[in-house]
Image (cartoon, rainbow, N blue to C red; front, side):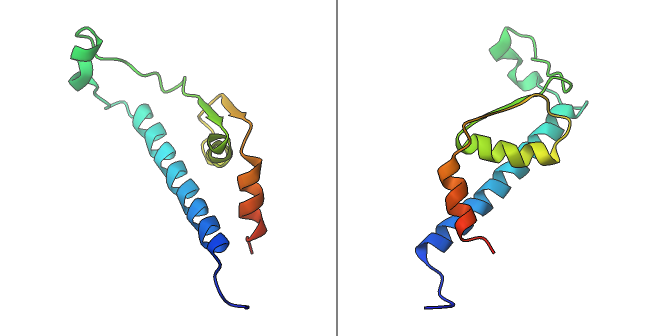
Length: 102
């Protein structure tokens, strides 16, 4: 029946929203790492009394399966992350999402 939302439509919409949420989280994490005011002193005890230091110029991304799909979107909007390694993006999910896209 036309105009009804199927279970497959709901699953596709849920996955699209989930991917957008995760990419947004990754963008925020990248901004946090690049923030010169970032203070990791609270975890220093776990690292022998010395706070870890993060180098914002050396941030990369490795994604497998769904991580490869998410990484594709993340790579498109976050040019300061390098390298990007997208290993076997989940092609089955891409087909499922694309089948119900407008």
